[in-house]
Length: 501
Ligand code: MN
Image (tube, rainbow, N blue to C red; front, side, top):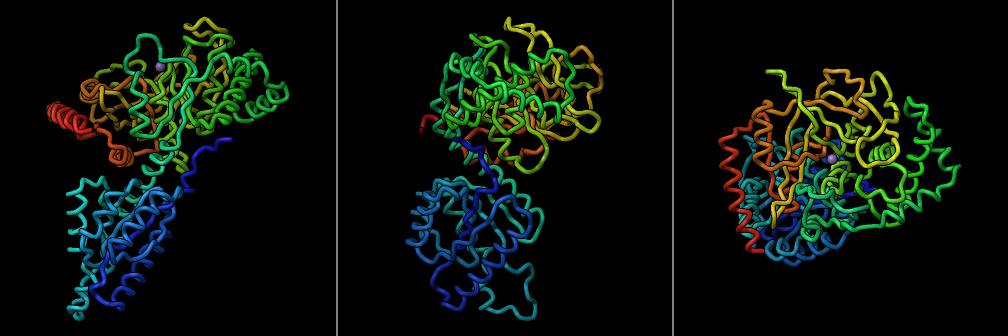
């Protein structure tokens, strides 16, 4: 049986750099101070544990520890800090071997210089300012991908930056273990949902494989009625049943149970399907896919395995925040001059974690689906909540992938839209509609995205660095002229990187 990834199961190894030059007493103080920093970090509400792994004095110690970090499955990344000077030739072999995400914490044990007491002993002990420069140099020289967090270890800003790194690293680790189940291929003739699955597995670890729709259809028919009854009970507790068509809901319950079984049996945490390949099935999964997304599975429509995997890992990144993350699609616009909005929805599959449940629970309704030629599927209909969010797209540029993150401001939908038979969200992209959509088109962002109220651009930037991905951040600061230049430059850089393997 597969289990969805647990962020709380990740740990981060804290490694303090030093050397033998200063004598036992100083090294003992370095160890004690490092422990104080680590204990303090663990009491600030970071999402994962920080484990102190000792003071490094030799190349052999560093190499040994990096090998252990690579090998230890609970280690999701390392945090390095040089309390004293730690000559960096000692780090070359270890950094060369390191396969886990790395954060360089540039801090110092004491916040202030002790005016009356500072002497040469103090200078020897508290020299992060120059020890970390030596450390930064070798990482730069070797091209070690890392996040640098600078500031005092008790400051909230530092904790927030470490938190973002941890969430990104957890998503990266979840991706290295991810299997994506494909029912049916990509939607016919669509370009943006295509991609190089071999490259994705190499870069992100995602294993994307096909499974026969016929097997799913057979499994659906075999779901016992008692299982369907239990799900129907759960639906009536959690949602408002707003349809007479009970049989359509029961069919969705069968699909939910059958897909969950197949996902678990095959150790998959994300899946795709397509309305063009439902042979042997009564309906397109609507409610069923919404429920599985709500439970933490990744989903992408029309064979979009890239977005499905991204939904899953962004759900991992946002774990515990209670904010909401969903598969999304830019559908239609409201072009009221000066207050333009994007209406996001999908044919059926929007995750109820993004529902505004303050006034009403999501409603289960059945409506005829205009495409696909199957019977009317049950689906959850609701309004998305207001608030800041991030809309993220992953596209294959040929030889490399590009991650685009657009900051948006979701609003309570400004229309009732009583005839719209699907869940809906409305948002304003930053800095303004005209700039934002032009930038999105310029960068090649897809119509399929992941909309998250919890995952920040900082987390996605950290993730892109770990995965070796091109990252385009569209925000309140987007300037079209600069973006055009950045994209041209970036294209050249990435083509060179691809040439060098
Ligand atoms: Mn779609």
